[in-house]
Image (cartoon, rainbow, N blue to C red; front, top):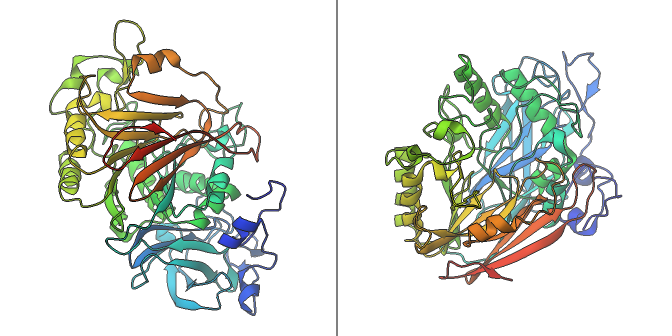
Length: 522
């Protein structure tokens, strides 16, 4: 593990993570390039020398023969106009892919264009690579060189090679330091999933730990600036640089509790806001061109296979949902949530998911999504009370998905949103507490949202919901290890986020054996 006092490296490789070493010279010096200086950008404020790679690098959506490489040029990343200090012109960006961190064995290189219409972002979609292989990558723009990233392709179809995967959600810049991202990187995962609330729309508040820049995000300039501020965080950059990511959004990438074309509160400008948020999200994530927005629409749900070991079905539970029932009042109960035609996925996405389950040959089918799937009754007395922003507000839709989950060999639901660790066994029927167990649900806490948290064990809530086996109100992430025989889940926590560089520990671990949808203490 990296010593927290060690200077954070400009160039990060697997070896740097393992040994705690810093790259003293930058990637260009490693490969003997003539110049590793910063880029001089005409029109970038004063014309002074500036580094265009302030937002780091990332990779994502790995396939057996390819992966997406990402960067975005922004010498003045948090400029109010959202343009990152870039001129209103296309800039050529070179990229390189190698088998070693010194780039002595370069296997692919090319040129992309960073255009102002997409925030000077770059999405390089590689093909023809070896399956199950690690690669190092970097970018150049007129002499400046980015940090180095490490990525990998998915294994060959049918492969049962084990996978360490970490997943996270809910990172509010103002509410704490992103230490959990750094600790996640130090776990050296082969894959990282982000389940939503990558950034928050709110303006700064008086008690924020870190200063949030700009107003509440509504325009493209606002969202670009906010994403850029998040991406300047070195802990987040490190996590992006050590593994490919698969990302989906929740609500705060646009605004709290939005549902399809319905804002949280009446807002005639909401569709313009949604369009801006979607474009900025695409510009700032390692996504394929199939996810490029068209107006107010963006196809984000998708399926990625990790050999024969796992299939990741990534859902979008915001863009197609009916408005939250019961007046979206939080922990309540009402007949509306039981209506058979209510949907959180939309009909097309539901069919897509159930078809994927029906045709799956994977050892583990993993549903990456945003909100609580299992029954969570928060009324510890004689009544019931549910979060209607969760699947409890869409019971019929939820039960159809659960039925499909029960037909695969091993069904696992991954969840974010609620800022707490939970572990649950998924029952076939939400309203029938005696129904069969059809899968397991792993819920990750937040990276920072909610602050440091506390040690309230919620024993009364756990007693009310015996299928829920664990709860913890601390910040962190979940580390998983998939093998042919079992899934292991480690609930990782940091004791505080109001101060930087906290240590990480495993609060609880569970094992799910192949063919047995039960959570067993590890």
